[in-house]
Amino acid sequence: MAEPIIKICNLEKKYQSKNSEVFALRGINLDIYQGDIFGIIGRSGAGKSTLVRCINMLERPTGGQMLFEGRDLCRLSDRELRHARRSMGMIFQQFNLLMQRTAMENVCFPLELVGTPKDKARARAAELLELVGLADRAHSYPSQLSGGQKQRVAIARALASDPKVLLCDEATSALDPSTTESILALIKDINQRLGITAVIITHEMSVIEKICSHVAIIAGGKIAETGPVEEVFYHPRTEAARTMVIPEALKPERLPSERVVRIVFNGASTLEPVIGNMILDCGKPFSILYSDLREIDGVMCGQMVMQLPDDKAACEKIRAFAASRGLVLEDMNHV
Amino acid sequence: MFDAQLVEMLWEGVVDTLYMTVVSTVLSYVFGMVMGVLLVICRKDGIAPHPVVYTVLDVVVNLTRSFPFLILMIAVIPFTRFLVGTTIGNNATVVPLVIAAAPFVARLIEASLLEVDGGVVEAAQSMGASTWQIIIKVLLPEALPSLLTGSAVAAITILGYSAMSGAVGGGGLGKLAIMYGYNRYQTDIMFATIILLIVIVQLFQMLGNWATKRCDKRMF
Image (tube, chains in turn blue, orange):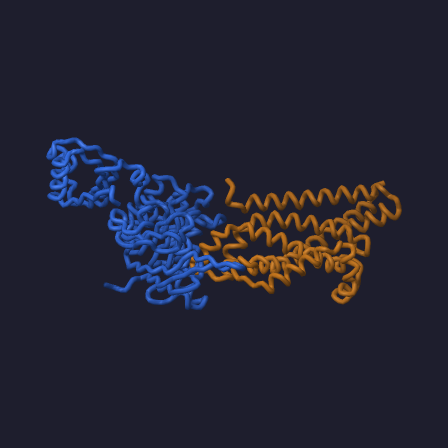
């Protein structure tokens, strides 16, 4: 496999006060590959924002390495670091646009920094505004734009320097659900069309599920678990990951105490009405306690939790039926 | 009572006052801008932290601002004579005016620049902007409306100081008010100067408000 574009080795961020030290991050190891949409999810205060800010050195790590294309950014001089930062676009929860500049001038800003001639910069900015669907608002000021439009300008601005990586720090957290959806679609589109690697920081599971290929769960300043999204979300191995990815309705104390099973769907068996056939096959009804299924890229994904009928023979039939469709029934009462 | 001679005298007073105020304001901004920007970037959470520079500037600014203007004017007389060659007249007044006003302007500028959203500065850093680029392209332009509001405050304060300077050899409307109004009990002349000062203050404030409103893109 190719070298990761971002490789974080044993990264540590420590805040020192007079008589105590607090670790915001400790022993972080992550590999992010070219073309990934890599999600980092965690609760408030878990260290996810600190982590993304360590990637472009807005926060200086206090230990470990942060390799970008094989170069340790911690060891670069100020000038080299400024240069490296131009290969990493960043967008923020609060957009952080220059309020006294139009959308067009905001997008030109990173080009001005490197001395691009004005007409060339404006042509490039116009292209980017077109890409994010805001060609008609080029001469509007941020105060005249909606939240979603501001984030689109911010994305265009982040792309102006032709970065290889786009860092998104809670980029959709200040937006309403449908705007969030459209911004995520835009990020995915950029990832696919331009091949830009995206690192997405969020506290929302749905953001990760919608667009990420890989995810890392961060808790208490450490990576609890990392891997492909389906694997981590539907088969969490650690307690920290479990508390993060298992919905409130599925916490043990909220479930009946026996015969509760979970089925994870990952695409193969959705052409047939599996659950319907399952009930017909065993001849006994059972209740669905929780279901979270959706179509991702044309295949059905998600999980369903149900309580099996109080009948040994029927249960055996259900298990056999599931096995024949390649589905695993996972016993929830023993978790 | 208001004969041609008197009108001419008042007019000269207005011109002198405006001259001192404008020249002192401009010079105060030259020095105050440098100090204000340094105070912002050198502070602990600034973009180029430098505790020594910050502390020295902070103390100097506070010390200078502690002087009552009248006393400062007298205290810097030797320096004024060294620079201008005399201690009376408009140009001589500019020296203490700038010394008194520059630290005040520095604080105004510091306050305006600190209003700029830290997130925007961070965004600029994430795009690889240097400290100088952040000052020139982010801090100053983003703070411009607030800087303009501040400049009206500064000009009006300097106008007030310049009138005070009439007491120890300065020119302008302040001199007229003290010479005729105070020393010769000609209250009418004193009233006339006060009204002129009020008009000038109003004009400064209106100009400041107009410029602020015109350049601020945050309000529509």
